[in-house]
View 1 (spheres, rainbow, N blue to C red):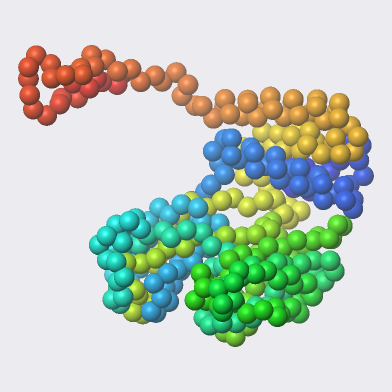
View 2: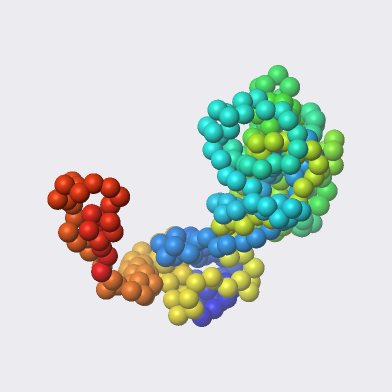
Length: 332
């Protein structure tokens, strides 16, 4: 139906609101809130993606790209084998304190953390933007652990593409050193670029904060055998769909239901402009359209699974392997 910009224009038109300044930011937020709701309620908020990452020699853990939510499989592209997934409990029972190096055969998830690449040594951190215009009333809060194991925070003021360096140093031996990066802004200021966070000592990017994110977290995995050399891994995963950001971004669901974003977006933001009755009307229309969309997704609504002739005990005294359709029913 429309691009991100056209959706904003339509919400403004429906509410007789000038699309500019603070109003533009509010309308953008309303549309993206509606977008997230539509994707979540129609089970379309994730998509499959494949990507290649490289392990680090002598490092047991690995941070994955920002949007990863569920790992489907991991392949070692060198010997064309799959790494088997295991649980933390299995690892702790089978290989507690394992320090052997080699080629990993298994992996397990260890959680989500605020940086993708660990800092190599006790170091200060720099933050900068990919846009020179991000230089007024824009900040990044770094929450970290120092050499004494004390959890502390420091606020850094962005200076466009010029790095702003922390006064405190994060210690990697203390719970990975950095717990979280969070960006925030003063009233009326907005981020135009992506924020880049670097380990000053090593000169390595440890996290990136895209425009659509305020405080990113990354999925981490650990290998049951520490990689002795860098290994390229092909990972297939389910990842989250990003917010609408650019003018020509296109909502990733059926075109004929794109008006839901306009209706729900108007229903959320128009009360802020003193138009509660109009907002209520649009919200009702948006909810109705969303329900129509959800009904449309049920492409086989008349299929019913029926259990027939269910037996809770051995029928007729017969023993042995249960027979499908006799012992535990059949599906018709």
